[in-house]
Each structure stands twice: as structure tokens, then as C-alpha cells.
Length: 161
Length: 242
Length: 76
Image (tube, rainbow over all chains, first blue to last red; front, side, top):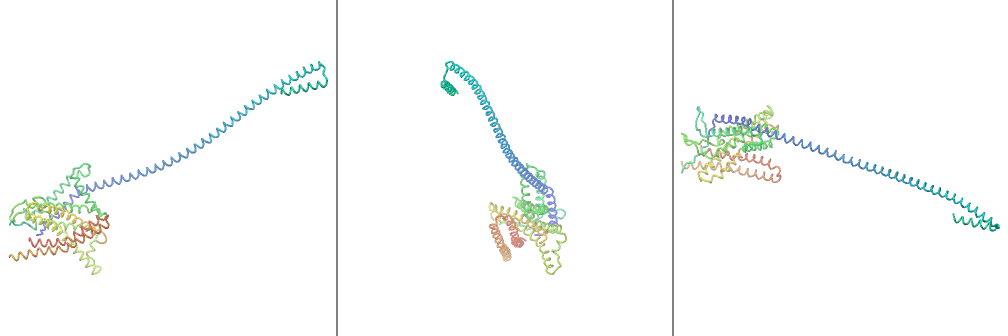
């Protein structure tokens, strides 16, 4: 076993050259690839996080919009209900008043006809009274008879009315 | 009885201008060229989605080792990763190349006797010592880079005799780290090769198969240990309190 | 000559045998404690494993030193 300085030197130089060339052709390209890959992974993680955040934001917005829409719908519904109530009341009241008017008219008409009839009847009664009186006068009536006849007439009249 | 052929040191195959080229150096070159070839031919695929399987495999290994480094040293993983990963890959393949079929059996018969072309790159004390020196010097370098001159204050502390002595001990411990690194790796891998040779010598067929599995595992563990220890030492050096 | 070879072999064998005893006990204790820790806190298993491998490597280094000495004595 002998140690020779030129062999040692050869080995050292050889190893130095090997390190230099391997660093140039093997390690640096591979480390670059690793770095690129890590960067890519980091980037994708970042974008994924951003997308996730955006998604959450959108979800919150959606929730808000939904609740707002719900509130609005409730409001609209209530307003519609109120409107319908009002309209219904109005319709009912107009209907009522119309009906009342109609009834009033009818009543007035009835009263009118009644009054006319009464007038007519009164006229006829008067005639009848006059004729009967004439007849009674023809037959010369006693006071008593006269009174009886008038009573009778009045009775008849009452019956009529 | 044939002789068991084991050589504790790397053997020279040929020489260039007085410098002998050993089979371990040859294996080191093969490992280096193989790794660089892999890296260069795989480079254009790394960022693509559809890539050949072997590129996927290579990328998975490098990435999981990066995760490992980032688990131990989260702040400085990018800075220390090249050194630590290169140690891991080089030691791994340098140990495994000695397990290849024919690594210890195909060779030349020279004046020194039979010499195989390939020998485990880390089964040579020169390789492991060079790696250990590189690692420990890197530890000092990173310590100085992150903490400035203050880093060397732990070796030279004149505030009290006890602290001075502790500083000397720290200095000695750095050298013992070099020796520990070098001999741990060399001992493990070389012992593995001796084990395989002895088993193959005793029972030529089948019997050495489970030991190959063991040696593959040992190679992996030693690569991991060398890289992890380097990383931990660097981590200790760059942190304020040691 | 034969006696010298035999004593050399004996020294080599004793080197690794005695040198391996301490680390063997140490590795056993380290792994036992690590397993205990993992059993108590399974989430920390990866961290414990890393530290365990480091500790085992340190303990094992001692055995490797004696192994290297034995190999040097045997083959050099």
C-alpha cells in the first residue's frame, strides 16, 4: 500500500472536474426543474385559495341576495294583501251603498205608488160617499139611519184600507 | 493449490512519461466519463414531461438525494448539494465498478504478475485519501466562507491554556477526520473485495452470489455515510456554535 | 520459517478479532437504542435513522482500522 502524490493529485483534480461538470449538466438543471415545480405548486395553491375565497364571497353575496329577496317578497305580499283588503272593503262598501240606494229607490217608488193609490182610493171613496149619500138622501133617512150608514161606510172603508 | 491473488494497492497497467497509470485510476476515469456522459445526454430531457426511463431514474435519484440533503441542512441545501451529491455518486459507482463481472479477472500479465484492467476505484487508498482531503478542505472552506476568519479561531485560541489545548485538539481532530474518512471507505470496499475473492477461491460457483448482494449494499451504505458525514461536518462548521 | 508464518497469521487474526469486539458491542448498542427510540416515537424514524447510520459509521470505523492493520500485516 503506497500513497503516491501524483495519484492523489490526479484523484483530487478528477473529482474537482467531476463536481464542476455534474453541477453544470446534472444538478443545476434538475434543481431548476424542482424550483419550477415548487413555484408551480405554490402558484396553484395560491390561485386555489383565491378561487376559494371568491367562492365564499359569492356565497355570502348569494345569501344576502336571497335574504333580501325573501324580505322583499314578504313585503310585496303584505302590500298586496293590504291592497286587496282595501279593494275588497271598497268594493263591499260600494256594493252596500249601491244596494242601499237601490233599496231606497224601491222604497221611494213604493211609497209613491202607495200615495197615488191612496189618492185614487180616496177619490173613489169620496165618490162613493157622495153617491151613497145621494141615495140615502133620496130615501130620506132618519138621523139614526144616516149615522148607521156613515158608520157602515167608514167600516167598509176601513176594511178596504 | 493455486495461489490466492490479492493486492492491497492498485497496480500499474502502463506508464505515461514516468507516471504510472494504475487500474484504480482507470476505473476512476471510467466512472467519471460515465457520470458526465449520463449528465450531458440527460440534460436536454430533464425539463420535459416525456423522457426516457433512464433519465427518469437518474432524476429520481438526484431529487430524492436532494430531499435527503435538505432534510439535514435545510438552509444551505442548494449550496452544499453539488459537493455532497458528487461524493455520493462517485463513491457509489466507484465501489460498484469493482463488482462488475470481469473487473478483477480481465487484465494483463506484466512484469509485476497479473494485473486486472479495472479495480474498484475506492478500493485504492489514493482515491479515498484524495476524496477525504477534498471533503475536509471543503469543510474548512465553507466554514471560512460563512463565518469569516472567526472560523479559524477555534483552532487558535489564546484566551486560556485550556482553550489553547482544545484548539490544538480541534486541529488534530480535523486530521483524524481525513484519516477516518479515507480508511473507513478503503477498508470497507477493499475488505469486500477480499471477501469476494476468498469466497470465490474456496467455492468457485454460486456461493459468492449472496456476498455480491452484501457488497452492493455496503457500497451504497459507505457512499451514503461518506456524503452524510461530509454534510454534517460542513453543517457544524458553518453554524456558530460547534 | 513455518513458525514465523504461523505467528504472523495469529497476529493478523488476533488484530481483527480483538479490534472487532468493541465496535461489535458498540454497533449493537447504537442500533438497539435507535430501535427503542423509533418504537417510542415512530414519526421521528427518518431522523433517528440518519443519526443511527452516522453513529454506526463512527463505531464501525474502529473495526475498519484494525481490519486495515490486519490486511497490511497479511498482504504487505
